[in-house]
Image 1 (cartoon, helix red, strand yellow):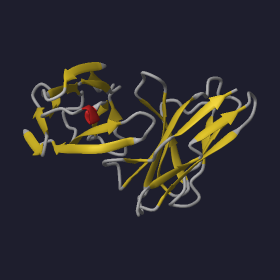
Image 2 (tube, helix red, strand yellow):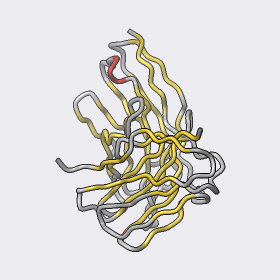
Image 3 (spheres, one colour):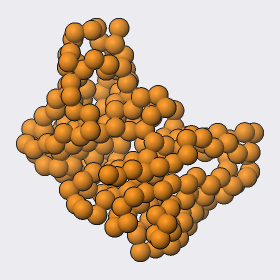
Image 4 (cartoon, rainbow over the protein chains, first blue to last red):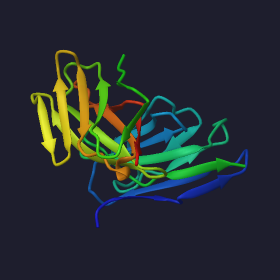
Length: 111
Length: 112
């Protein structure tokens, strides 16, 4: 089955720790994205990548970092510099900058 | 700047039609999309419309596009409890090399 997987589904972090969220796709899509969703809020773009070894900041990149070493993978690291990281994180991919296909999400909670 | 706007809430009775509205800003957008998000899940692409179309129908879903007013709507016929979800409108800005711009989403509640 082709699709996007995110792991883990739930993640707990202590304050001051970095954590990495995984996103993998086997759709052969060039572009991948990370969004943050807070309760009652829409999607806010953190980072996106249109091609391997290249990525751009979105609207709320501060406190986050990404890498794109492989076409299939776009991990997101939430660093200790992100002051309010508790949220639902969504990864997506697309063929070009067209319709995006989303993973199931990771819910991050800071303890 | 870009902004896609939607009303935040809509409540309908089971069996009635639901109409979710959206306004967008980029008159040159090539495609406009509707996504559905069920609780605790990712977004699912429901349907899309190309900018040179006025209407698109897909089973219970009808998309209407008014380019002059930059207004997009999604009509769900015979709304069921399983349609309860958040619906997001998104535009594909024409200027290129820019991701989709999403609205904040409309929460549809279906009352049995």
